[in-house]
Image (cartoon, rainbow, N blue to C red; front, side, top):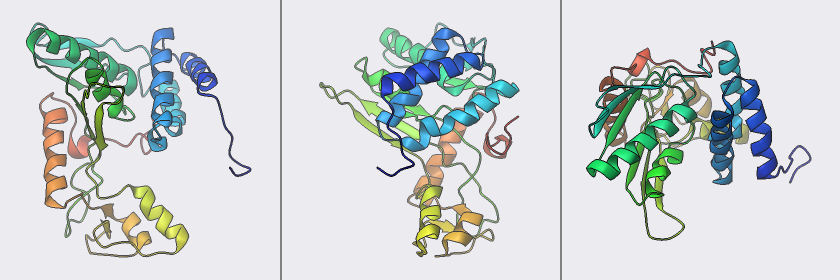
Length: 264
């Protein structure tokens, strides 16, 4: 451990975050949910989607970009296995937790269920919600679309998001099968690390802003990421966008905004 690192007990962190989210306008129960989602993600070692995201979540709650008290509702299919819901611009943790509970309850009734939600926000690690299904003895899928940040060689701008997807299945013990991935070849942080180390990057990680092949991490970071498995990851990213954006009548592709680039 270095001098600028600090160890915090998970229980204390949950309590602190619950207070912070409550102060930002969430109900007491929603604040507990948001705190639990955050801490659990860090306990899994997915630090890129845990506490690191709290400042922008709080900023957007305070600014009103995220609705702290969403009136989430069913738009279509309340008594059917396929359902469309409105998240009323709520915090992604809260909307997705509510929606996945609905999906699991419906699956118990119908054998299978799909709940699509529009008007939501960044929901952290997708595995948080896929696991809700495996905890109940079911196969679970959770996915979302994001603003375009990947493309193919020759593109002059990103053409699709590295849309994350988590898949879970119960295995009869304490640990379910869990796969939580995005559709880019690597995370952008890998390019930043190569910059710091003065290293070249593999030519299948990213392209320049002109869509040209590069092994320069600086040029690659100014450009955009390549999809995992090239056409395979690109095709999957578009399919997830169709399923999570187009099917629900929500935003997709370049209609989506960055929560950092558009905090208000």
